[in-house]
Length: 240
Image 1 (cartoon, helix red, strand yellow):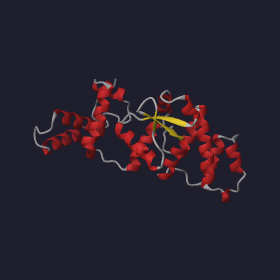
Image 2 (cartoon, helix red, strand yellow):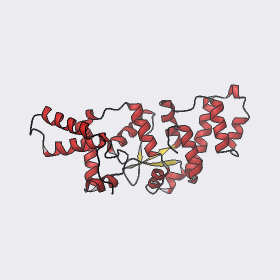
Image 3 (cartoon, one colour):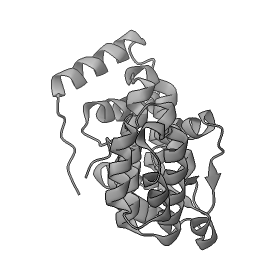
Image 4 (spheres, one colour):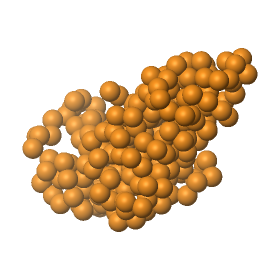
C-alpha cells in the first residue's frame, strides 16, 4: 500500500481554501467536502486516475465501492476543476486501458463466444473515463456491450480502428502501415494480398480490411504478441 503524498501541497491547499470560502464558510456539506478533497487529490496526482478502485481503496483505507462512488459523484459535482480536452482525455484513457495487464484482467469478464467473435474485453474502472470511452464508441456508430461486469466493455477490433480513424491516430502513410503489417504478420493472407497491389494504388480501405481481419483473428486466438503489435499500430501512443 502506497501512502498518499501530495505532489504540489501549496496548490492543493490554495485551491481547497479558495473553493471552500467561495462557496461560503461552512456552507459545503460533509459529502461536498469529501468529493472536493478526492477530486483535488486526483488532480494533484497523489491518487493515480488510472489506478484500480481496489488500489485507491487501499490508499484511502475505504472500500472499493466507496472509491467508485467518490469518482462518480466527484466528477459530477466538481468536474470544472479538472478541465481536459476530449482528444487528450481519450488518448489517456486508451493508453491506460489497452495495456497487456489490463486486457488480461478483462478477458475473464467476457464469454469465450464473444472472444471468438472478435470482441476485446476492455476494463475501465474510473466511471468518468468509462463514460468518455462509451461516448467514443457511440460516436463511431457502435454500441457498448457489457456482459459479466459493468466495468468491462466488449469492443470489436473494427470499432477500435474506427475510433483511431475518427481521432486521426493512425499512420497516414500506406507504405509505412504495410511495412509494419509485414513485420507483424509476414505469412498472413491479408498481407500477401496487399503486397500484390501497386503501392501507388493502395487505398486506405484495403488497409482497413486487412487490419480488421488480422485484429479479429488476434483477438479470437488470444495471441497477445500479435494483438499488442496491431493495437500499437492503430494507437501509436500506447506505451511499450
